[in-house]
Amino acid sequence: MGVKRIIAKVLGRAVTWNKLPFGTAIVAAAGSSERMEGEDKLFADLCGLPVLGWSLRALEASPNVHEIIVVTREDSIVPTADLCAELEITKATKILCGGEDRLSSVLIGLAEASPDAEYIAVHDGARPLVTEEIVADAFSKAYKYNAACPGVPVNDTVKRVSDGFVTDTPDRSAVYAVQTPQVFSADVLKAALHNAKIKKLKITDDCGAAEAIGIKPAVSLGSYENIKITRPVDLKLAEAIIEARRAK
Ligand code: CTP
Ligand code: MG
Image 1 (cartoon, protein in one colour):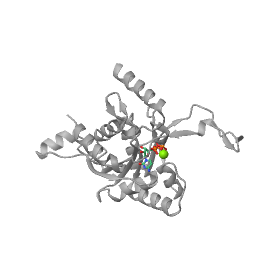
Image 2 (spheres, rainbow, N blue to C red; image 1 turned 180 degrees about the horizontal axis):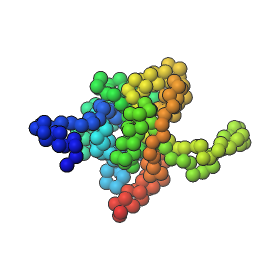
Image 3 (cartoon, protein in one colour; image 1 turned 45 degrees about the vertical axis):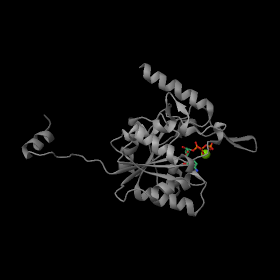
Image 4 (cartoon, rainbow, N blue to C red; image 1 turned 135 degrees about the vertical axis):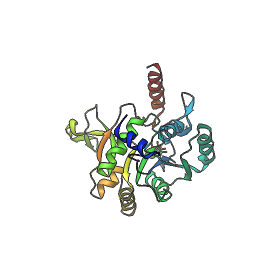
């Protein structure tokens, strides 16, 4: 029996040790799936469950997450509520209508986060293969460094290109592909996203907004399997990954 459990026993009551800070997960799911050739990727079938269902289940299972806010398209609000009910996503407290771009959608979710939220994760609804380990490591790095994003070293050589010609080649060992969930202390995320909105910054992820206010996000555990469903081929890849996981 560990020391903490002995003390709990002596005290004769339940004692909660190392209580995790209140965490909110904002799920960005209000995009128009243009590169999916007409199919709403969030509700595309992936091994028997909609893509969004997989993402929600992973966040529901995370002890770091206490509340889930889903930001979706207007016509998906009811189907999203039905999905949450069907999958028993008990942490989903709000389903909101998103904005014109991803930043606006995340800001809409952020405005509705619980005042108790100490850490906020932003996750792409279109990233269904995220695991509990990836979520846990992003939160634990954010507890320490205020901002964190899962990342993996790029496999391909990356070139900077201008007008169809290569201008330079960044050192590949220093280039990472980053994923979601990206996790922030609540104050950092609020300051970063409002600054990005006011200054109309062209950011493609939330860490980009944090970097613009001088924050240095930590890179947390990522995975080559934590892909974003962007094009039809990604659904096929995701299916193969799930089948391989099931066969283990
Ligand atoms: N997203 C959002 N609100 C927007 C745009 C995007 O919540 N106005 C979400 C998407 O639903 C997705 C995530 O942000 O889960 C990542 O965006 P992306 O993969 O680009 O999805 P879409 O914008 O839907 O796809 P496309 O760019 O091909 O239209
Ligand atoms: Mg997009």
